[in-house]
Amino acid sequence: MKVDYFYAQESKTGDYYYGFVFDNSGVYRLGSTYTSGTDQLGGTWKYTFYNVSTADSVFQGASWAGKVYDYLYYDADQGSYFTPYLDSQKIASGTNYLGSDADSIYLNGGYQLFGHSGNSWYVVPESRITTSVQALTSGADILDGSFGNQTLIAGDISAVFIGGPNDVLIGGTADDIFVFGRDSTGLITFGQNTVVDFTIGQDKIALDRTIYADFTGLQQRIAQHGTDTVITIDANDTITLQNVAAFNLHASDFLFV
Image 1 (cartoon, helix red, strand yellow):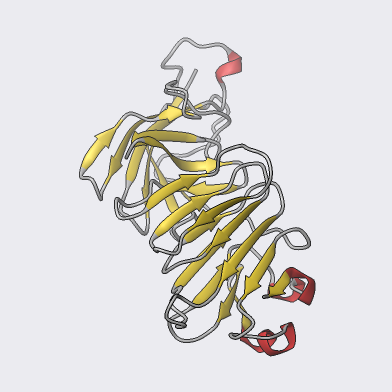
Image 2: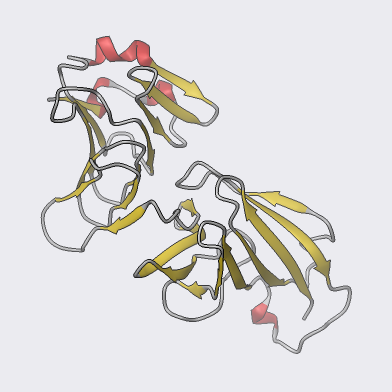
């Protein structure tokens, strides 16, 4: 079985990791590069192949073709190296070529995802950012990011997210509501929020009606930026919906409370 070695670096944090792919089909070439989709912090992973086998270098069966093994992760914020694990289960392995790693490292009391998982890309959050993972309970759970600089991750049940200064809000598979309003002094201070996995027709954006009373007033503040939709409340406060087309948004996707 041929083995191709790669190096991947994230554009926003400077984090990087090393891994290799079992590749008998010549999918990758020496020096070739690949760029991922946008992760939950707004950056991308760039993969570079620095060593590609031209002959079998390990003895493995055909079923190993395409498997990815990430073996070293460097967290630039911590200045430390970590051993990656597959799906938080302490197995140093990934699956099915690049973009299917679903790996993590253990940091700040929990497993932090990086690479690709489900329909999203991830990087290990900076130390100033906490990760709150919704518990799988009944009913709708509230994930409160009002203190700011947090990455909040929903599970498989409905969640209510409260946006705060510069949060990253990652929706789950159920119906989610993303709430943006004024702070306790009456000011708009939720900063630049990023919403990941917003599903049109299922999830809702809830705005304080003293900011905008209806969709007609808000509509002029909605614009397409690349593959994302950005809702600009003012110069300091925005809501970015990753991988959402602005023309698909309708009044039914919003609540004014």
